[in-house]
Length: 412
Image (cartoon, rainbow, N blue to C red; front, side):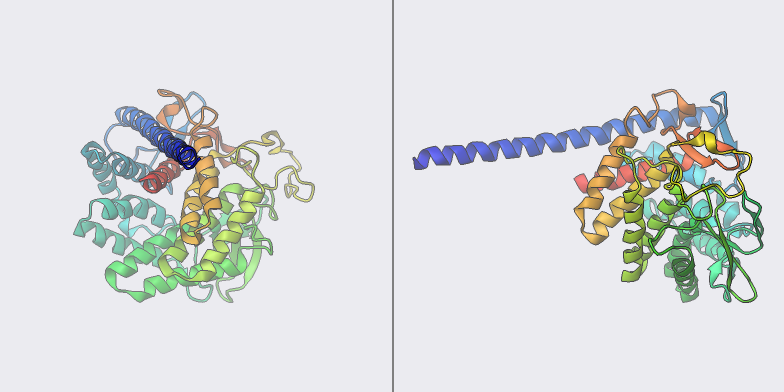
């Protein structure tokens, strides 16, 4: 009998080991296949657009499927160099390092850019990744100079960084000190520059901005407003608005993802538990409003009776019912991997893995040689202003690859 029970135990153990090995093999195959796809697409993209000129940063595609590029000073210009760094990290192939360096160096003139807040994304997603993966002293200098440029947009009365000099919401509300939820992603530049330079003021600005955002950008359920408009003299809130969401009281999906990602990053940089608590509450709201495939509708409150487009007398966004936004999912996916790590809550990691696999399915990932050589389909930029509707977007690809990097690190 003892021998029989021992044989059963050994057999069961062998099955568990085999299942585990097969599962890990499948995961590695999934990662490898997506890396192969991404390298093929991006190689074709590079052949199409050529070397960086300062005017040819990939952004999306037009109605004919032709690649739309933007100039260096576009808020999305840092994502393509960042994606190249992700490919280098995923492959350890010097070909991608060389391309990443080439496109990163093309961003150098932005170090004195002060026209809007997104110098953080433009510089840190290029030079920040460069410093992390292939450090050079010159990269440090550019990051520090860029952070000081971003800091010029900070007002110590408002205690926040002004996103744009002027903003008019799609429903007509105007502001001369608008602060968008996206701005949370620019704070990483300040935090890194503070470490590199020893200038604590840069970190203080980032923390003040995060605290002001936490105070004013969220409702009780941690649903995020898109834009808060401040009085630069008193620091008070003038009004809360949405530029790219359904209505002023709804949760624009990409904005909610930006918020979760930004506060998770702030926790990682400061170890302030308040930021991690905020990130989890923001993400929990996001998860609660996801459909079965975990890829959100462009606005998390779309279709609900209490969320009506303000001033939408022309019905100009009704055609967008249930339109998905893979870019919002990709940002959230990366944030979920971080939250799983920081909170040690495996539920977040499991949702991130499922989301990543759904993004990599034929429903959202393009076929090779299509989609203007971008990776993901079905993204949304700005529905209320009839811009970038159901198209690929360069930042969706960036966060998709970043999520793949994080998943690969978990697997080992």
